[in-house]
Length: 175
Image (cartoon, rainbow, N blue to C red; front, side, top):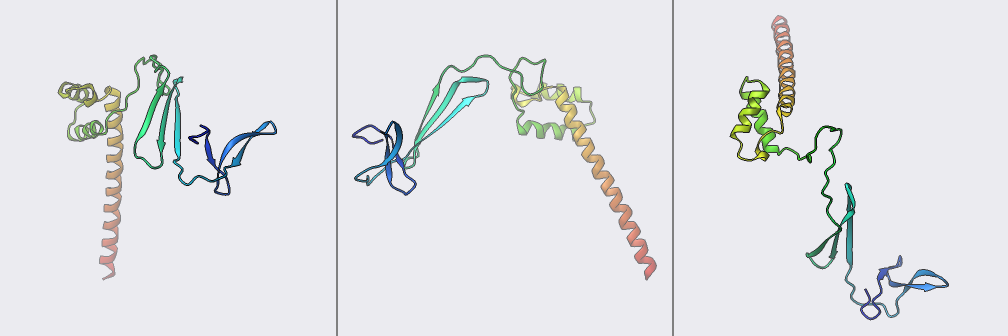
C-alpha cells in the first residue's frame, strides 16, 4: 500500500513497482515515479470450508515478519455431513490415532482372541475414547491384514527354505 494515496503497489514484469490506475476506461498498472526505496510485501491466503462455503479463513502475513493475522469470517457450520461412503452414521469422522493402531496390531499378534474380545478389552482399559478402537470392525480389519501379512511371510520363508535346501543338495552332489 502506498501510505500517501492508500492504493495497492504491485511489482511490474520489468522489476519496477507500479500502482493500478484507470487509463482510457480500463485499470492498468502504471510505473511509480519516483520508485520506492523500501517495500513491505503483504501476502494473503484465503480458504473456504467444504461443508460450509460461507465460512472462510484468511491468513495475512508479511515477508519481513514471522507473525501473522488469522481471521475467521462467517459462522462455523453446526451440521455434520457423513464422511465418504458412510450412510448410517450421524457423527463426525475422527481418524484413529497411530498409537492406537499400533496397540491393536500388537494385541492381535500377541493374543489368539476373537476381535470382539480384543475390542472389549481395549475399550475397558482405555481412559478416553481417543485411546480405544472405533469399533469391532476396525479390530477385525487389522486382524485380517496382520494374518495376511503373516501368511505371506510364512510362504516366503517356506520358499526360501525350499530354495536353500535345493541349492545346498546340488552343491553337495557337485563335490
